[in-house]
Image 1 (cartoon, rainbow, N blue to C red):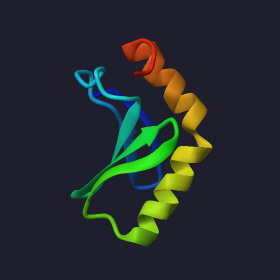
Image 2: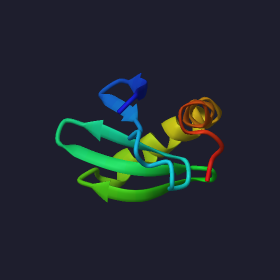
Image 3: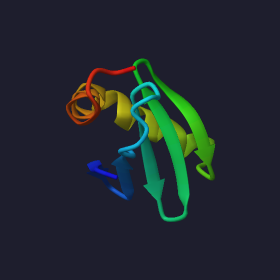
Image 4: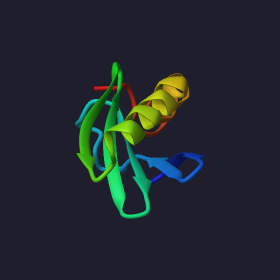
Length: 80
């Protein structure tokens, strides 16, 4: 599970065994988690984040999408 970004309380990472899915990242804070697609950026799943916090996380993902997508491609190969 490579961590690809840390920002404030958020750990942003991907699983090494999910290369068959479209490019995405997981975001954890404490005991809550969510998953965002990278291209285009969009919420895939949410386990406990409030809507307002999800909007903040989405902005964070959007601001770093190019770098996150590059890291995905370096680790998994071309995006699916």
